Image 1: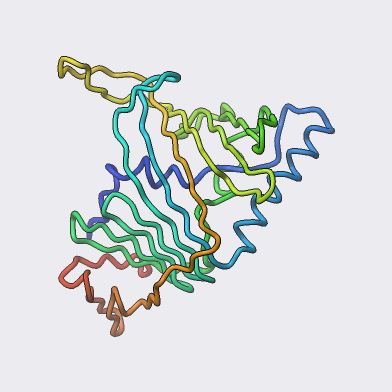
Image 2: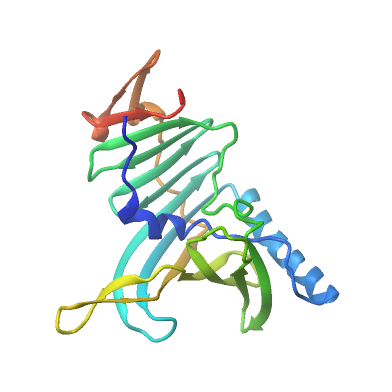
Length: 245
C-alpha cells in the first residue's frame, strides 16, 4: 500500500525539524556558551507542558532580498504528551505511543506506533551529525545562531540554517532555512526560472491561552485488531498502517 505523498508539504514540515547540537569550529569559551544556550532551548520545549505556536512561512527567491514566492500559515499545539501540527491541509498528531499523519487533500492517514512521544515542534537531535554551529551573535533580545551542513556526501535539504532565539524564554522565534536544491520560480512575465530559495518561518508563542481541545485517538480512528477505519472528519479516508511494517 502506498504512503501519503507529502512532497508538496515537505518545506513546511521539514521547516520544523531543525538541528541543535554541540558546535564545531568555535573557541573553547564560545563553545561552552553556545552549548549552554542551545541546552536551554531544548529544556524549554521539553519541560513546558502547554503552549500554542502560530507559524508564518514564507518561501523567498534567492539567498537575499524580499521576493516572496509563496506564503502560508500553520500552528503547533502541545498539551502534555499530546501535540498537533497543522498546515497545508494536513495534520501530524502525536498521542501517547501513536502518531497520525493525515493528508486531507488525498483523504489518507498514516498510523504508526512510536516508542517515545515527541510532543515538541522540533527534533533537536535527529540530524546532529550533519550540521555544525559556526557562529552565535547577540542582537537586541535575541541570540542569532548560524549552522551549516558538514560535507559528508549525504545530501541535506538545507545547506544553512539561521535560528533567532529569545534570550529570556529560550524559545526559537524565527528560522531561516537555505535550500540546497534549486526551485522553479515564476517571473513577472509568467515564465519559470530555477533559482536558490530560502524558507523563513516566524513562530509566535502563546504561553497563556490553553487550547480548547480534548483530543482522543477515537476522534480520528477506530481500531479493531489489525482493522482500522477513519472516524469523524476522517471517515472514509484510506488508512495506512505503518506499525506492521
